[in-house]
Image (tube, rainbow, N blue to C red; front, side):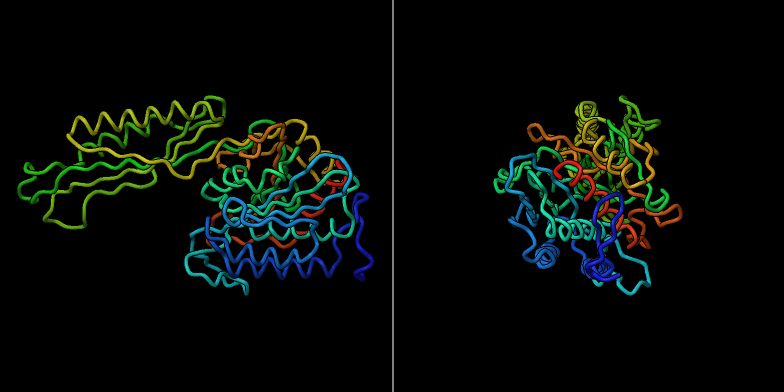
Length: 395
């Protein structure tokens, strides 16, 4: 098939073979040079270069290194945003693939390189045929993995003129048949936050522990008490899960009774309101343990994700696009326990959001596994889905 003979699927003109080859090569380049949350400067440079002069407006530096490409019809109508993520993970890739990461300890093991390729594919199609009305904004968002990026973009003054009426995103999902989808309205991904509890006492000689103040007993009491606050179970409005992720006490030495101890935990609820109560209980237990054992206490919050819920109308637009493309979809495993910062876009005035999970294959390595790699076959499929949504809504 020549470039001028673009494929048509479900009535939508789609990517050419040359497009797919070039987007696949670009995805492999992005995979080779990953950057973690907040330092995606070179990734943003590559995205801007790939966009070239396709967009009517290009906004950079959003919420850090975010890039927005605007395709404007010039006619009145809604603004529809499609979002992907720029950041990779601080995990060592264990793979022999030719395009494996060149950065030690950092890799695209969640598929954000593929999500970027999908949005760049959509940019190609929009550049060839602008929407008939309204605007499309392609948002290459920073710092999804630590939960800070979407909120930073939304709060950025440079984003004010781009604020959408609708926002859509997708995420690849291993364990689901390749190219099939999970989609459901309502709660989609849980709220979560990391809590760091630090206890400070006084060192002493290990032969005279009574001359110091050790955090050992406080930590021993806190571990089961915190774990009992959120035991998981089936996802429901009352779902609460507290996962202890790290514990540390003193120095690796036999002659010192320790002064410092830390506990890290991840708190998870299906919706936002129960999270406040769960955090309050954690802080109360920590304060009681510190006071009981004469320790100084400090706490901090990290990787703060709001719950993500799919608006009914936005979900219906995705479902209509999938039906038009003959792509199978079902609620599947939704809602899911992992978190997703896309929910921050729902905080914008009158913005309706929805996310769809796109199957990466039944036996594909799981997200965040050291041997995970985004399936290149999803580039064309994801682009078709987004393009169909845009054309259905804006013509």
